[in-house]
Image 1 (tube, rainbow, N blue to C red):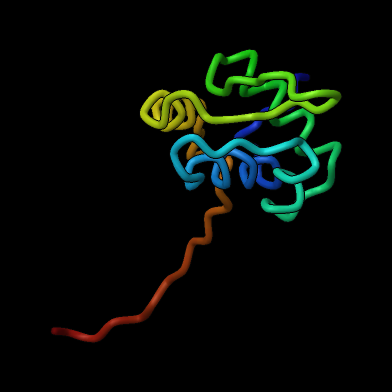
Image 2: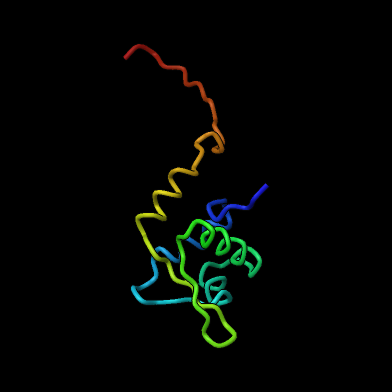
Length: 99
């Protein structure tokens, strides 16, 4: 099973990228820190986003710089991949008298 950038913990990465300033880039470690996730979570999320062509990466010395390429495409990919059935459902009953 392939890990998704839109799973619970990993979704902090695209969320962080979505709110970055125009022209701003992140290193992988900087992105992980800004999103509050581990480096391994950031790494697989960025790989998934790159596979979907939603982020651009450039080499800057020994470091890769990451930036979101298209906000709209990110939202569309996220919506396409979202499954409402993954949400926990709670059924409740409330006794009600006559209105």
